[in-house]
Amino acid sequence: MVSGGGVLTAATPGIGQSYFGKARGDDVEVFTLKNRKGMTARIMTYGATLIALDTPNRAGKLDDIVLGFDSLQGYLNPRDPYFGATVGRVANRIAGGRFTLNGRRYQLATNDGPNHLHGGVRGFDKVVWTGEVVPGTEPAIKFTYVSRDGEEGYPGNCRVAVTYRLTDANELRLDYLATSDRDTPVNLTNHSYFNLAGPEHGDILGHELLINAGRYTPVDATLIPTGEMTPVAGTPMDFLHPTAIGAHIRQVGGNPIGYDHNYVVTDGGKGLTLVARVREPTSGRVMEVWSTEPGVQFYSGNFLDGTLHGKKGVVYRQHGGFTLETQHFPDSVNHANFPSYVLKAGVTYRSTTTLRFSAD
Ligand code: GAL
Image (cartoon, rainbow, N blue to C red; front, side, top):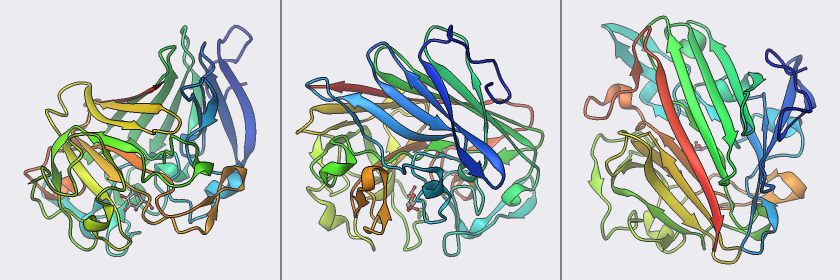
């Protein structure tokens, strides 16, 4: 039986289901989606988390290109850095965990020094969602979760859903929905770490990255935006043309060193727009990120420090994976000049991000 949803039958193309373990007493299931070309995605109900993604290299050989753990235990470790998770109610940081909405002040849980990060102490990445098969010709699973009024300090009962769909064009499409009975900030993203060579093949510094963004939002020492939107052209932040991630990373600075910045997608937020294109030269794998979101957090795995042992026993060292988290800008709830992510009561939040895979 599929929890909370339709019954899985032999007639359901390209979908499998298996038991993964227990999280705080609740069963966690894994759904496997497979398209007609053999590409495979595995998503578990804990955190609606992408735990594996097998895509072909230029020779057609499938490899798992996302970081993660072999067992549920790895994900329950508080040091799991959001590998593959669905992040919310608000992804990224909120300064001091504080904001004012409709004249009322809110204090959220703080879990990143003085700030609120990725939904708080027990964000959407640390709860068990309900998975349901979506009828259709392409394999798809809809995960739902109800976040209660007051959870991590947020106002309103908020119903959220994310549907993962694998198309025969080798795309993984993520469609998000949310509604709330009170106005609340909502900013959902997926936090997968990619290494297009396969995480067992070293760091991501040789990956060639293009980000369709002429500006980024600079941050203070606690990674909170200053409110400026600064042109990237000619600086180490510039990925307007394909550039190796490692080419200028030393000049970016930071402690630990590397990229951990939100980019302002050019003409973003108006429809499905090209956000980024990444190519890994040895495997030939290419990933394009398309999204309806106006921003993307590019994070070069700076905090990975060799202490986490992932799938196949691989040690995850600094810059062993990167994320491209499509989202609204960090701390938008405190910056009137950033696009708002406040969801009005009764209105439906919609967001789509598509990852397109190919090889050359
Ligand atoms: C990223 C964030 C980083 C770090 C990481 C988790 O989304 O930008 O600063 O917190 O998540 O380790």
